Image (cartoon, rainbow, N blue to C red; front, top):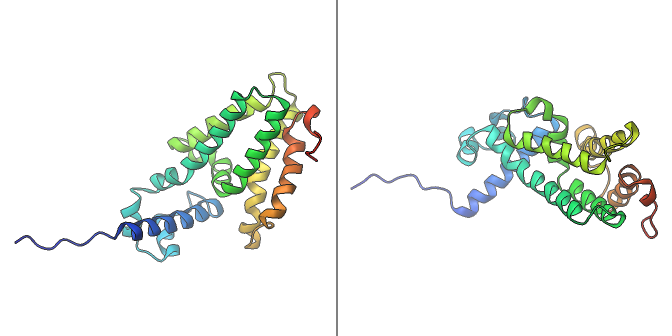
Length: 205
């Protein structure tokens, strides 16, 4: 007779544990920093052993890739939809709406790769995110874009990423409820990203 092997967790339990580890890791990476967060820190914060973390994710870099890939894929789709639509004034407005939805859904992921990207070079998902940001900037800013226009893009992207996480990091709570954040973001992002001719389109105040 062969010895009994330890049973693997049921699929539902594995999924729940993996989701909990992702949530804890994302909060740690965004607030403390990737370099300062160890797998043991994540395990302790989640109430699991380090071996449990390694059962779900082969390494800290693999965990980061798992966390950031959906956000990078989502932003890529938004940008490609805007480019395919012909970059008109109307598509620019739609892009801003999509971008705001992205910001609210992926605030922690965006904050992580925007604010830590320079120190995480060599990690595939972060390199991909950096290339995407460059492409986004090149698409939204014309070839003859002024310094002001480039600053508008930088403030819109980096400022939103920072502001949406700052409340959690420094105050221990969200900056504001989502139903208050969305219209405020629409006003600010439209002013920063929309061309002068479309910053105050009818019905988009």
